[in-house]
Length: 102
Image (cartoon, rainbow, N blue to C red):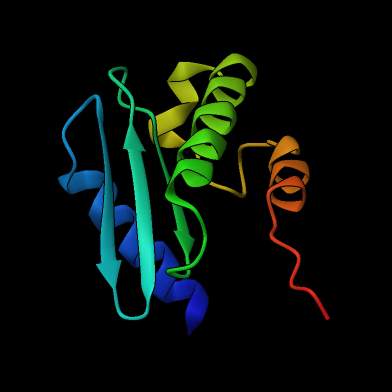
């Protein structure tokens, strides 16, 4: 499924990226943009080739900064989407969604 692809690909890219790095990796028809902070917190945006790379990394910066303020560092490794509440993500995804002209 698409969800399984996104989860597996995101984990793999984040695990293989060094601390303090940003990278964009092509996987199938998508570009996966990863940012791994020096503290080990990582985020991945999976987008099509037309979505601006700069916008992806701006989104990752904002989401990871806010997440690190709201969620205890002790929960980062042991937590999961089922156990960590981070409601701001939906707002960011909505704000950064590109609207296609009709």
